[in-house]
Length: 140
Image 1 (cartoon, rainbow, N blue to C red):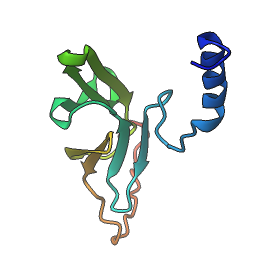
Image 2: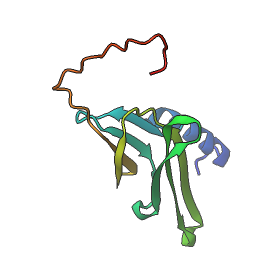
Image 3: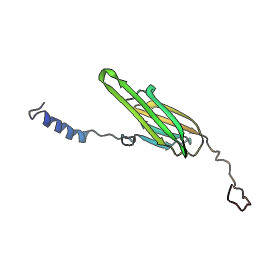
Image 4: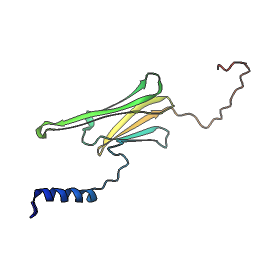
C-alpha cells in the first residue's frame, strides 16, 4: 500500500496495466482459433487452449445434417481442486473443406492445440478434359 491508499494503488495498477500488458498473438480470446491451408494441401487449425492439459483436450470432426461441410469441435476441461481453479474450452466451427477428409491429428504445445486435417490430394499433374453431353436435359 502506498501513501495514497489501496483504492489509488488499484487505479494506478489498472491504468498502468493497460499500457504495459501487450500481446501479439494471431489467436485471440475473441476469436480463439485460426485456420489455414498448409503447403502440403492439408488444413491446419490452431486453437487457444491455454490452461488445459493435453490429455483433457478432445477433438472431433462430424458431418452436419443438410450442410456439405463438417463441424470441428475442440473441447476440454482441466481442474485444480487445491486452488479452486477450473479452465475449459468448447469451440465449434464449420470448416469449408471441399475435399474428402482422410484423418485428423492434433498436438498441444504452449497453450495451443494444433489440428491437422488430412485431405485426399488431387493429382494436379494430369490435365482433366471435359466431355460434352449431347442431351436436351440438364440432369447430369
